[in-house]
Length: 324
Image (cartoon, rainbow, N blue to C red; front, side):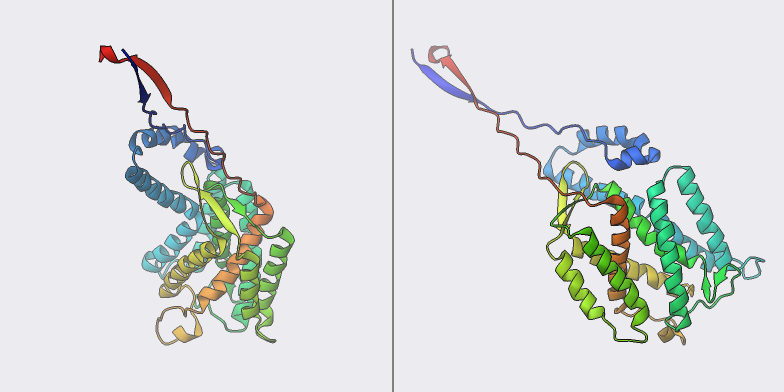
Protein backbone atom coordinates (compact mmCIF):
# COMPACT_ATOMS: atom_id res chain seq x y z
CA UNK A 1 0.00 0.00 0.00
CA UNK A 2 1.32 3.38 -0.85
CA UNK A 3 -0.04 6.86 -0.83
CA UNK A 4 -0.96 8.79 -3.98
CA UNK A 5 -1.25 12.57 -3.95
CA UNK A 6 -4.17 14.08 -5.84
CA UNK A 7 -4.92 17.75 -6.37
CA UNK A 8 -8.46 19.01 -6.08
CA UNK A 9 -9.25 21.54 -8.81
CA UNK A 10 -9.74 25.06 -7.61
CA UNK A 11 -13.38 25.99 -8.11
CA UNK A 12 -13.93 28.65 -10.73
CA UNK A 13 -14.09 32.12 -9.26
CA UNK A 14 -17.49 33.51 -8.84
CA UNK A 15 -18.34 37.10 -9.53
CA UNK A 16 -18.73 39.31 -6.53
CA UNK A 17 -22.01 41.14 -6.16
CA UNK A 18 -22.07 44.29 -8.24
CA UNK A 19 -21.36 47.34 -6.16
CA UNK A 20 -23.82 50.17 -6.43
CA UNK A 21 -22.35 53.03 -8.38
CA UNK A 22 -22.73 56.71 -7.60
CA UNK A 23 -25.44 56.76 -10.26
CA UNK A 24 -27.41 54.17 -8.29
CA UNK A 25 -27.41 56.48 -5.29
CA UNK A 26 -27.96 59.73 -7.18
CA UNK A 27 -30.74 58.75 -9.57
CA UNK A 28 -33.69 56.85 -8.04
CA UNK A 29 -34.91 55.85 -11.51
CA UNK A 30 -31.65 53.94 -12.02
CA UNK A 31 -31.58 52.57 -8.46
CA UNK A 32 -35.04 51.07 -8.90
CA UNK A 33 -33.73 48.67 -11.54
CA UNK A 34 -30.23 48.16 -10.16
CA UNK A 35 -31.05 45.03 -8.16
CA UNK A 36 -32.88 43.26 -10.99
CA UNK A 37 -30.14 44.21 -13.45
CA UNK A 38 -27.44 42.85 -11.10
CA UNK A 39 -29.27 39.52 -10.77
CA UNK A 40 -29.65 39.25 -14.54
CA UNK A 41 -25.95 40.00 -15.06
CA UNK A 42 -24.90 37.37 -12.53
CA UNK A 43 -26.91 34.74 -14.42
CA UNK A 44 -26.00 35.85 -17.95
CA UNK A 45 -22.34 37.00 -17.91
CA UNK A 46 -20.66 33.71 -17.03
CA UNK A 47 -18.23 33.45 -19.94
CA UNK A 48 -15.83 35.92 -21.53
CA UNK A 49 -17.97 36.29 -24.66
CA UNK A 50 -21.13 36.88 -22.65
CA UNK A 51 -19.34 39.29 -20.35
CA UNK A 52 -18.10 41.28 -23.34
CA UNK A 53 -21.61 41.35 -24.85
CA UNK A 54 -23.13 42.42 -21.55
CA UNK A 55 -20.57 45.19 -20.97
CA UNK A 56 -21.00 46.41 -24.56
CA UNK A 57 -24.76 46.81 -24.10
CA UNK A 58 -24.31 48.27 -20.62
CA UNK A 59 -21.82 50.81 -21.98
CA UNK A 60 -24.31 51.90 -24.64
CA UNK A 61 -27.11 52.24 -22.07
CA UNK A 62 -24.92 54.36 -19.80
CA UNK A 63 -23.92 56.58 -22.70
CA UNK A 64 -27.57 57.03 -23.67
CA UNK A 65 -28.43 57.93 -20.08
CA UNK A 66 -25.55 60.43 -19.99
CA UNK A 67 -26.85 62.00 -23.23
CA UNK A 68 -30.34 62.44 -21.78
CA UNK A 69 -30.37 66.24 -21.80
CA UNK A 70 -28.39 66.71 -25.02
CA UNK A 71 -30.31 63.98 -26.84
CA UNK A 72 -33.61 65.53 -25.80
CA UNK A 73 -32.48 68.91 -27.13
CA UNK A 74 -31.42 67.46 -30.50
CA UNK A 75 -34.74 65.59 -30.70
CA UNK A 76 -36.63 68.82 -30.01
CA UNK A 77 -34.68 70.66 -32.71
CA UNK A 78 -35.42 67.97 -35.32
CA UNK A 79 -39.06 67.56 -34.24
CA UNK A 80 -39.83 71.29 -34.36
CA UNK A 81 -38.20 71.56 -37.79
CA UNK A 82 -40.36 68.76 -39.16
CA UNK A 83 -43.68 69.36 -37.45
CA UNK A 84 -43.82 72.76 -35.74
CA UNK A 85 -46.54 74.79 -37.52
CA UNK A 86 -45.30 77.91 -39.28
CA UNK A 87 -48.52 79.71 -38.33
CA UNK A 88 -48.11 79.08 -34.59
CA UNK A 89 -48.37 82.26 -32.47
CA UNK A 90 -45.17 81.27 -30.64
CA UNK A 91 -41.99 81.28 -32.71
CA UNK A 92 -40.12 78.00 -33.04
CA UNK A 93 -37.03 79.33 -31.20
CA UNK A 94 -39.21 80.50 -28.30
CA UNK A 95 -40.96 77.13 -28.18
CA UNK A 96 -37.53 75.48 -27.98
CA UNK A 97 -36.51 77.79 -25.13
CA UNK A 98 -39.66 77.06 -23.11
CA UNK A 99 -39.33 73.32 -23.81
CA UNK A 100 -35.70 73.37 -22.64
CA UNK A 101 -36.68 75.13 -19.42
CA UNK A 102 -39.49 72.65 -18.82
CA UNK A 103 -37.13 69.75 -19.49
CA UNK A 104 -34.65 71.17 -16.99
CA UNK A 105 -37.34 71.47 -14.30
CA UNK A 106 -38.61 67.95 -15.05
CA UNK A 107 -35.15 66.40 -14.75
CA UNK A 108 -34.55 68.11 -11.41
CA UNK A 109 -38.01 67.30 -10.05
CA UNK A 110 -37.65 63.60 -10.94
CA UNK A 111 -34.06 63.48 -9.61
CA UNK A 112 -32.80 62.41 -13.03
CA UNK A 113 -30.46 65.38 -12.77
CA UNK A 114 -28.54 66.32 -9.66
CA UNK A 115 -28.15 69.85 -8.27
CA UNK A 116 -24.42 69.72 -9.07
CA UNK A 117 -25.21 68.99 -12.71
CA UNK A 118 -27.72 71.85 -12.74
CA UNK A 119 -24.97 74.19 -11.53
CA UNK A 120 -22.69 73.13 -14.37
CA UNK A 121 -25.54 73.54 -16.86
CA UNK A 122 -26.31 77.05 -15.59
CA UNK A 123 -22.68 78.23 -15.70
CA UNK A 124 -22.14 76.76 -19.15
CA UNK A 125 -25.42 78.30 -20.34
CA UNK A 126 -24.13 81.73 -19.32
CA UNK A 127 -20.69 81.45 -20.89
CA UNK A 128 -22.13 79.75 -23.98
CA UNK A 129 -24.72 82.47 -24.52
CA UNK A 130 -22.08 85.18 -24.06
CA UNK A 131 -19.91 83.56 -26.72
CA UNK A 132 -22.92 83.15 -29.03
CA UNK A 133 -23.73 86.86 -28.77
CA UNK A 134 -20.16 87.74 -29.73
CA UNK A 135 -19.84 85.16 -32.52
CA UNK A 136 -23.12 86.08 -34.21
CA UNK A 137 -22.12 89.74 -33.94
CA UNK A 138 -18.96 89.12 -35.98
CA UNK A 139 -20.79 86.90 -38.49
CA UNK A 140 -19.39 83.48 -37.56
CA UNK A 141 -22.91 82.01 -37.82
CA UNK A 142 -26.50 83.22 -37.77
CA UNK A 143 -29.93 82.24 -36.45
CA UNK A 144 -32.28 82.89 -39.36
CA UNK A 145 -35.65 82.74 -37.56
CA UNK A 146 -37.46 85.24 -35.35
CA UNK A 147 -37.65 85.01 -31.56
CA UNK A 148 -38.84 87.01 -28.58
CA UNK A 149 -36.55 85.37 -26.03
CA UNK A 150 -33.23 86.47 -27.43
CA UNK A 151 -30.17 88.60 -26.72
CA UNK A 152 -29.08 90.43 -29.84
CA UNK A 153 -29.19 87.89 -32.63
CA UNK A 154 -29.06 84.91 -30.27
CA UNK A 155 -32.20 83.00 -29.20
CA UNK A 156 -31.89 81.95 -25.57
CA UNK A 157 -32.46 78.27 -26.26
CA UNK A 158 -28.99 78.14 -27.85
CA UNK A 159 -27.32 78.36 -24.45
CA UNK A 160 -28.90 75.03 -23.55
CA UNK A 161 -26.98 73.38 -26.41
CA UNK A 162 -23.73 74.34 -24.70
CA UNK A 163 -25.17 73.34 -21.33
CA UNK A 164 -25.94 69.90 -22.74
CA UNK A 165 -22.21 69.31 -23.22
CA UNK A 166 -21.46 70.09 -19.59
CA UNK A 167 -24.40 67.92 -18.53
CA UNK A 168 -23.06 64.99 -20.57
CA UNK A 169 -19.60 65.16 -19.02
CA UNK A 170 -20.99 65.50 -15.49
CA UNK A 171 -23.34 62.55 -15.96
CA UNK A 172 -20.58 60.39 -17.49
CA UNK A 173 -18.35 61.25 -14.53
CA UNK A 174 -20.91 59.76 -12.15
CA UNK A 175 -22.17 56.89 -14.28
CA UNK A 176 -18.71 55.58 -15.12
CA UNK A 177 -17.16 56.39 -11.74
CA UNK A 178 -14.22 58.26 -13.27
CA UNK A 179 -10.77 57.90 -11.77
CA UNK A 180 -7.53 59.29 -13.22
CA UNK A 181 -3.84 58.62 -13.44
CA UNK A 182 -1.31 61.42 -13.96
CA UNK A 183 -4.00 64.10 -13.93
CA UNK A 184 -2.62 67.65 -14.22
CA UNK A 185 -2.99 70.19 -11.44
CA UNK A 186 -6.46 71.81 -11.27
CA UNK A 187 -4.98 75.30 -11.56
CA UNK A 188 -3.21 74.30 -14.80
CA UNK A 189 -6.45 72.94 -16.30
CA UNK A 190 -8.32 76.09 -15.27
CA UNK A 191 -5.63 78.31 -16.78
CA UNK A 192 -5.75 76.43 -20.09
CA UNK A 193 -9.57 76.63 -20.14
CA UNK A 194 -9.44 80.39 -19.55
CA UNK A 195 -6.91 80.85 -22.37
CA UNK A 196 -9.06 78.78 -24.75
CA UNK A 197 -12.21 80.71 -23.93
CA UNK A 198 -10.41 84.04 -24.32
CA UNK A 199 -9.02 82.98 -27.71
CA UNK A 200 -12.53 82.40 -29.03
CA UNK A 201 -12.96 86.17 -28.67
CA UNK A 202 -9.50 87.59 -29.32
CA UNK A 203 -8.59 85.69 -32.49
CA UNK A 204 -11.00 87.87 -34.50
CA UNK A 205 -8.92 90.98 -33.81
CA UNK A 206 -5.54 89.51 -32.90
CA UNK A 207 -3.42 86.48 -33.71
CA UNK A 208 -5.17 83.10 -33.48
CA UNK A 209 -3.42 81.02 -30.81
CA UNK A 210 -5.33 77.85 -31.60
CA UNK A 211 -2.22 75.86 -32.57
CA UNK A 212 -0.51 76.93 -29.34
CA UNK A 213 -3.58 75.89 -27.35
CA UNK A 214 -3.68 72.48 -29.06
CA UNK A 215 -0.03 72.00 -28.13
CA UNK A 216 -0.69 73.12 -24.55
CA UNK A 217 -3.60 70.69 -24.24
CA UNK A 218 -1.44 67.86 -25.54
CA UNK A 219 1.40 68.69 -23.14
CA UNK A 220 -0.99 68.93 -20.21
CA UNK A 221 -3.02 65.77 -20.85
CA UNK A 222 -0.67 63.60 -22.93
CA UNK A 223 -0.03 61.17 -20.05
CA UNK A 224 -3.45 61.44 -18.42
CA UNK A 225 -5.63 58.35 -18.46
CA UNK A 226 -9.25 58.17 -17.43
CA UNK A 227 -10.36 54.95 -15.76
CA UNK A 228 -14.06 54.27 -16.26
CA UNK A 229 -16.17 51.46 -14.84
CA UNK A 230 -18.72 49.89 -17.15
CA UNK A 231 -19.58 47.06 -14.78
CA UNK A 232 -17.28 45.59 -12.14
CA UNK A 233 -13.81 46.65 -13.17
CA UNK A 234 -12.34 49.90 -14.40
CA UNK A 235 -11.20 50.13 -18.02
CA UNK A 236 -8.87 52.88 -19.16
CA UNK A 237 -8.28 55.14 -22.11
CA UNK A 238 -6.28 58.32 -22.80
CA UNK A 239 -8.28 61.36 -21.77
CA UNK A 240 -7.34 63.17 -24.98
CA UNK A 241 -8.80 60.33 -27.05
CA UNK A 242 -12.03 60.53 -25.08
CA UNK A 243 -12.32 64.27 -25.71
CA UNK A 244 -11.67 63.79 -29.43
CA UNK A 245 -14.39 61.12 -29.69
CA UNK A 246 -16.91 63.36 -27.92
CA UNK A 247 -15.94 66.26 -30.23
CA UNK A 248 -16.69 64.03 -33.24
CA UNK A 249 -20.19 63.22 -31.94
CA UNK A 250 -20.87 66.91 -31.27
CA UNK A 251 -19.83 67.67 -34.85
CA UNK A 252 -22.41 65.13 -36.07
CA UNK A 253 -25.08 66.74 -33.87
CA UNK A 254 -24.11 70.16 -35.21
CA UNK A 255 -24.71 68.93 -38.74
CA UNK A 256 -28.23 68.02 -37.67
CA UNK A 257 -28.63 71.55 -36.29
CA UNK A 258 -27.61 73.15 -39.59
CA UNK A 259 -29.55 70.62 -41.67
CA UNK A 260 -32.72 71.74 -39.84
CA UNK A 261 -31.75 75.41 -40.46
CA UNK A 262 -31.70 76.06 -36.72
CA UNK A 263 -28.45 77.96 -37.30
CA UNK A 264 -26.34 78.39 -40.43
CA UNK A 265 -22.72 79.12 -41.29
CA UNK A 266 -21.68 81.53 -44.04
CA UNK A 267 -20.69 78.68 -46.41
CA UNK A 268 -24.26 77.33 -46.11
CA UNK A 269 -25.92 80.55 -47.31
CA UNK A 270 -26.79 79.10 -50.75
CA UNK A 271 -27.66 75.59 -49.64
CA UNK A 272 -26.84 73.09 -46.95
CA UNK A 273 -23.34 71.63 -46.79
CA UNK A 274 -21.45 69.68 -44.17
CA UNK A 275 -20.07 71.68 -41.28
CA UNK A 276 -16.40 72.12 -42.03
CA UNK A 277 -14.07 69.62 -40.39
CA UNK A 278 -12.11 72.47 -38.85
CA UNK A 279 -14.99 72.80 -36.37
CA UNK A 280 -13.80 69.54 -34.81
CA UNK A 281 -10.82 71.44 -33.44
CA UNK A 282 -13.05 74.17 -32.07
CA UNK A 283 -15.28 71.63 -30.35
CA UNK A 284 -12.27 69.85 -28.90
CA UNK A 285 -11.04 73.10 -27.36
CA UNK A 286 -14.50 73.91 -26.08
CA UNK A 287 -14.66 70.45 -24.51
CA UNK A 288 -11.53 71.28 -22.54
CA UNK A 289 -13.42 74.28 -21.15
CA UNK A 290 -16.39 72.02 -20.34
CA UNK A 291 -14.14 69.48 -18.70
CA UNK A 292 -12.50 72.16 -16.55
CA UNK A 293 -15.90 73.37 -15.33
CA UNK A 294 -17.06 69.86 -14.41
CA UNK A 295 -13.71 69.04 -12.80
CA UNK A 296 -14.13 72.01 -10.46
CA UNK A 297 -17.34 70.40 -9.16
CA UNK A 298 -16.42 66.71 -9.25
CA UNK A 299 -12.73 67.04 -8.27
CA UNK A 300 -10.73 64.32 -10.11
CA UNK A 301 -9.86 61.37 -7.89
CA UNK A 302 -6.76 59.24 -8.49
CA UNK A 303 -7.11 55.67 -9.63
CA UNK A 304 -5.90 53.05 -7.20
CA UNK A 305 -5.28 49.67 -8.79
CA UNK A 306 -7.11 46.90 -6.90
CA UNK A 307 -4.96 44.54 -4.91
CA UNK A 308 -4.56 41.17 -6.49
CA UNK A 309 -6.08 38.37 -4.50
CA UNK A 310 -3.72 35.69 -3.35
CA UNK A 311 -4.16 32.47 -5.22
CA UNK A 312 -5.92 29.82 -3.19
CA UNK A 313 -3.49 27.12 -2.10
CA UNK A 314 -3.83 23.77 -3.80
CA UNK A 315 -5.78 21.35 -1.67
CA UNK A 316 -3.80 18.12 -1.30
CA UNK A 317 -5.32 14.83 -0.24
CA UNK A 318 -3.62 11.57 0.51
CA UNK A 319 -5.66 8.55 -0.47
CA UNK A 320 -5.15 4.84 -0.13
CA UNK A 321 -4.09 3.46 -3.51
CA UNK A 322 -5.55 0.02 -2.70
CA UNK A 323 -8.97 1.63 -2.54
CA UNK A 324 -8.58 2.69 -6.13
